[in-house]
Length: 86
Image 1 (cartoon, rainbow, N blue to C red):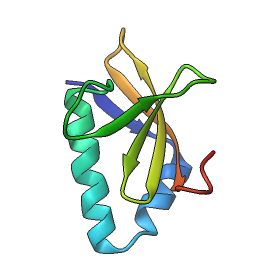
Image 2: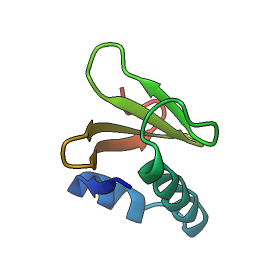
Image 3: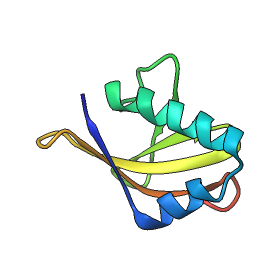
Image 4: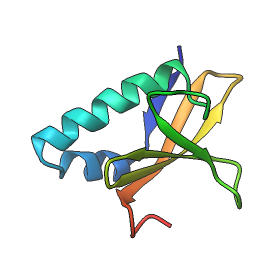
């Protein structure tokens, strides 16, 4: 199982959401720990075309992350509303 590391602006973004959205995000991040690649049926993940990372969709929110396989780490570097992330 992978370990999730969050950038401080992602932590701030998640904490500013309402309790229902926070719970949904935490559930999706827990599922992401098991399989961080786009083959998952329960997660909407896509490989980014212009970078080496991935995009996780949780409702109207998007999270950009990289996977470090050697250390089993998922580094979530950015999270924001759908129109503001890219």
